[in-house]
Amino acid sequence: MAHLMAVRPPGDLSARFTSTAGYRVSEIRPCKAAIDSIDLKQIRCFVAAYEEGSFSKAAEREHCTQPGLSVYIQRLEAMLGHRLFDRKARGVSPTIAGKHFYGSCAEVLRSVGAAKQQILDMGGRVASEINVGVSPTMFKGGLSRMLPDYLATHPYVNVRLAEAYSGTLTDWVVSGEVQVAIVTKPPLHLGLETTHFFRDRLVLVTRPNRKPTASGRGLGARNASDLEKLKLVLPSPRHSLRQVIEAAAVRLGSTGSGRILEIDGMLGTLELVRS
Image (cartoon, rainbow, N blue to C red; front, side, top):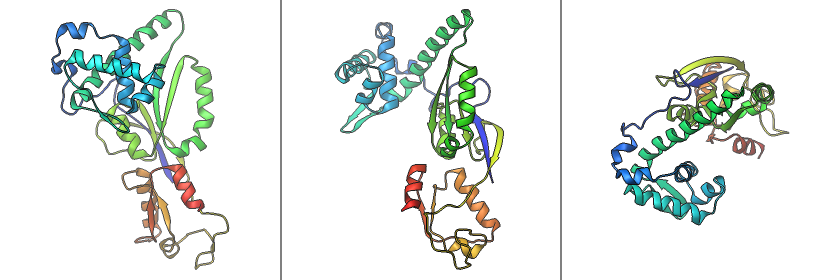
């Protein structure tokens, strides 16, 4: 039985975390004239490149050409006096300065979004955006039923969904990439609030026409000896789903299992089981 939990930072969902080093962009110390000349387009292009890890994907996201976006980034670097990205053959990665600058840029864009929302509120409409992390099974379960109702009653709320296993989702909540996540088990991270949603069943699945186990039960691994003969496809130990599965195996009296293949992705898991 898996417990599905919503995890989020305490307090206001719009609160963000600073870097572990505690630096803000002001500590990069660019000249004031350079800061005054930075516009929102440059900030949006920088944030897009940071989040996408690619100038081409960032350009597509911002509806501009890749050369044009590269020029925006180069001008921004010249204004700040710091290189913000390391250019690689298959994308870009932020420098230390880029990582510090990203937090402040994201804050600027949130402030602009909040200002826009305030204007909309004055017209009797409420608009906002929320980033939600969900585990893969949620798309086959309650989310498909809950989301349409939520969107119908909140027409001006933009919902962005990100799919991953619980360990990754919890990391995203901590880093601020998502405001809330629905995970399999409460995380151990301090500083996160949890709310119990519901319980869900975990079942053992295999490809069609699989041969029965030694006990003659087919797929039904109901005791330790059955389980220990199976080849299992499981998520890595950092994810709480793996911990739930291992706890269930212990309750069956198992001290181990057959060969385990680890993969952190639902589609890949299903394909491996099917083959």
